[in-house]
Length: 229
Image (cartoon, rainbow, N blue to C red):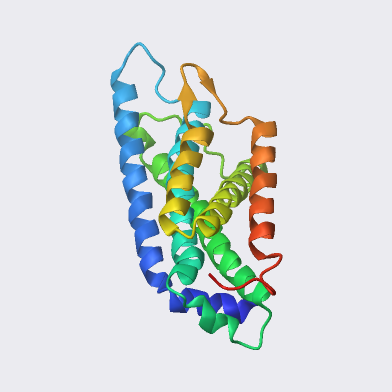
């Protein structure tokens, strides 16, 4: 399986995605720092208390990586069906389910690691620049296990939820449909209507997590006997 995952990364030029993820991380950091300055200038508000720091970093990184995961799903998996390159991989003396799972894991592992590292980098830079932005460093507790646990769990949740787009992309035979689904997921999971939002709603995220699992299962369960698109 590890060799298949490495093959997927090599075949899809993973260096390009590393570069794009790095660019996106610094763009997100730029906007977060801009917001910090605006809040600092507003004397009617406290300048970024702990909860606002964490919420803002989560909001920007989760929005970015839900869509980024959708793009990789469209390229690595749905695109392989669209371009018929999946036929070549299915000709290997390996179970089709194993081939597809290697694609799923190649996307999942990359985005989980990238999202986790992006959060850590952003938090580190915010902490280093707090004297310039007046952002409170009280919530950036690198010494606390709970801080790291929250980063890991939230990264697992967001990347996993993104795989709801997989089934829709395969059913519609369209990488664009997978990306559009990811954008819709961003609106649903990170947006708000007035003061109402589903951000941080544990039962809602649990439901999405189950739907994402079903999406992966339904995408691969009968692939051994199903005709290739």
